[in-house]
Image (cartoon, rainbow over all chains, first blue to last red; front, side, top):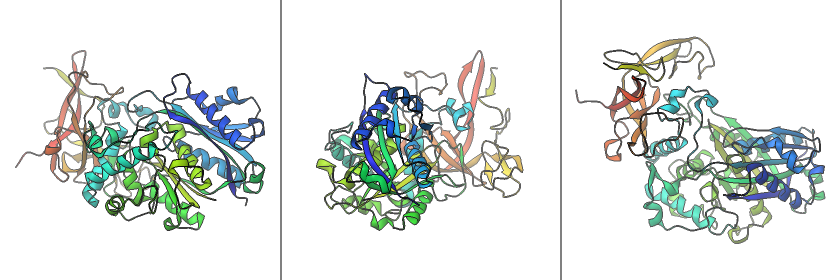
Length: 381
Length: 142
């Protein structure tokens, strides 16, 4: 079977774009990715795309051109980008197509998401009585995790500090101002133990990738990044998940664990081989827990890892080098693809001031979404 | 006396002197679900029976909802009158962990492992009918 290469990268910077709607931000990202690959939309044989609040992704053809290609919409919550790339990976692996586009975009209103219970298989009372907030879930998961594995509040602060520091040297980041520990510690509490600077915010933006058969990558670029695996898993009974009025009496492997294990097995490498990673950090606790769930350390070891700076840009395993969701915000449809965009820049050596110094060869991305979906990609030069 | 109706039927016994949560138990694998459902999340079977889940448990994890949620949150509160509430998972005697509002709403009053008991709380008035839902609070000392 053919391998899959990523040959074009495009980003419409995350944050607020008051003069553009969601689709326009997706189109801008798509055009940037096509230009990066030295090609155009007419050459695309297929597209997979997704957006939560920005409109139907296949409406992008009105902006990019009515070329008759297969354009399939993907929707998997915050894991939408991971699922879109997974679909493209499968299409090329299967020999169905040679080259195509993966695109995600969004434009969310300010403030926390307000999901509708019916869309998640739940009755109205769950939202009406105030239990259906993603912020509550993340807070409760890290609260229990801190209790079980001895993670301190100082470590929560350190993750936020790193995110905004990395954001401050990322020209496309939304939050480009580094924050002191004191500023982070004193921010208003949102959902105990997580305060304002420990959560990412819904945002706007677009991201796109041109993907193709590895054996034709040289037509588009001299520095392709190879997509070794793209795995998506939903939750097993017993994994502690969002939008769940009840949870099992035990905690089983999360979809992050099962997706990660499958991805490493398919790629034939282990966590120790990864040089740079993007781990879903919708809030600081998520980054901490996802370090262990993805196999990079044992549960509880994060305390030592963070204290020693091992996930800093110059550390043993740099994590969220562009500031992650915390500094970029989360336009849901685009967010998972931004992770891949950043890893490709790092592997190409194009990451500027935030470039990981050791010429990274293997990268890893992990996205997590409601109601318990994880997407893992392993990338290599 | 004002009529009191649940936000949703079938979540707990009502009216009742000592209300209990209602859920389902899989007759094949023994796992429980709340709310009650017709199929089993654990074994994929459809042999479910509605059962009482009791009204006591221990706090498995918690947080505090410090701002008033947006729609579809629907109570009589306004941003001015909103009072932060606790949210947690309470591990019931059958082992199932049920998500619930908590009466305690400060970090000092909440602790993983503390014993909890069910209470029924009014949150909204619809044309003279008081809408009630379930919550948990620290179990009174015996």
